[in-house]
Image (cartoon, rainbow, N blue to C red; front, side, top):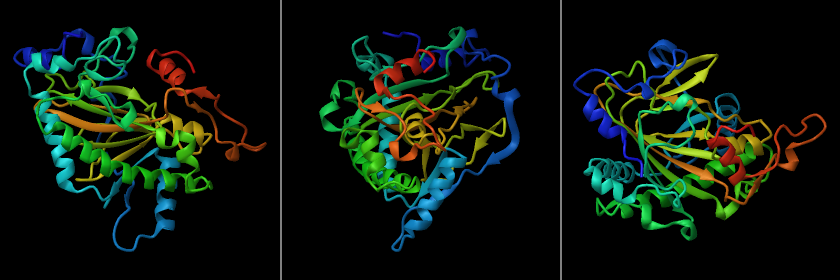
Amino acid sequence: MEMDRVQSIASLSKSDNTIPSQFIRSSDEQPAATTVHGVVLEVPVIDIGGDSIDEIKIVESITEASKDWGMFQVVNHGIPNEVISKLQKVGREFFELPKEEKELIAKTPQSGIEGYGTNLQKEIDGKKGWVDHLFHKIWPSNVVTYDFWPNNPPEYREATEEYGRKLREVSDKLVKWLSLGLGLEEQQLKVAMGGDDTVFLLKINYYPPCPRPDLALGVVAHTDMSALTILVPNEIQGLQVFRDEHWYDVKYIPNALIIHIGDQIEILSNGKYKAVFHRTTVTKENTRMSWPVFLEPPAEHEIGPIPNLVNEQSPPKYKNKKYKDYAYCKLNKIPQ
């Protein structure tokens, strides 16, 4: 069990305006020194709803954003605001529980990634992110174990499952449009990702107030190892994207879903779509939270460039590899 939770460290650090050395990033990572200040990036916002959607235009917009940015935001996505609000409410209430109750669903050596925890991946020089988290799978039902779902608040399961149902409707559309944007059949990308066995993994990130937000990061710079990530944040700004060799804050549109292209879709597309390089910052006064859902291939599923996208002019840029092997290398900083 990991005992040093960031939430506990934050409450101890609040009064003395310092943070433990393991949270202080190197000078080339510190957000105060590396962020372009006064500029907020307007990531593409794509309207995917309404009575008469123009699917050709949506496919064009998503394709362009996925090639150029590796991310976009969608509005009119069909998930009611109250469903998102309930998801956020129960997640926030879980992290506000006493530490002892949260530890009841702490990660174990046997649980893999699922459970309440702090450490996620091997960090260079033993540095840590200013964040605690909860991971658990929400779909398909045959991989869901409720051992790592909170019992408190009592509405947690209902709120999370309702969000999951609505989210799958959105994700099916997004993956279809991404597939069409590559010149593939509607279902081809979904099948290549794992089809109906694609795993939906929910993570709740909890970034408590940080006395030195100029020195710390919530999550270090990375691309997601998933195929696709669909995220809702709370109202506190924190997402940054690396673009044109600089880090920029990203403007968030209320009630939008933030979509990240992950490593597996970059591989499947043979590099036509780009996984977005991003990180998260923290604030001095406020708690930031986010709820990404990672769409991941099943562990034994092999991922490589889709054959239709490979030819003499576009040879394969990536090796074929089982997802579990890719994930192991990524988390342990081993070259792919």
